[in-house]
View (cartoon, rainbow, N blue to C red):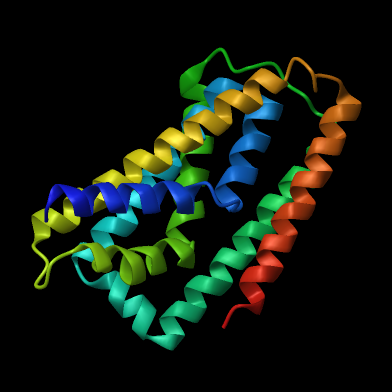
Length: 203
């Protein structure tokens, strides 16, 4: 794979990650309600989930999911269910603005694990790797080239997600009242439900 292909793929990854999706909404909500540390723990989980999906692609599991209707539907409905659960969590926690976590270990596990699950159960991640990534690889694709593009995608996604968390954390000074946090939670819940409905409508 030449440098131009890597640059083109990086630009494509940036464009895709800047498109609103479940990760953006959820990460912003975590940072707004629970602070920077919790948000960055979630970012680490999201990046790990994307890396796991990339590894699945390397072993052929991504293509299996994309080409097996039953497997894809199971993954899709699991993702829909998880999005609805996140929406319920967002709605239920409205008005509970909390101080930033001071104990990183206490918050890391919860938000890291949720970040991993959100992306392992995300059909969009599998389809990105299966439908878009191969277009930037020479045929036949080498494992090293595939791994490089997967790493680029994870780095791009992590950088953008970290930026979202930091921006949302900065907004806490403005949206620090329980009334504002209640509105944020309800809007976030509504967006997550809409994303779940959109995923349900996809064939």
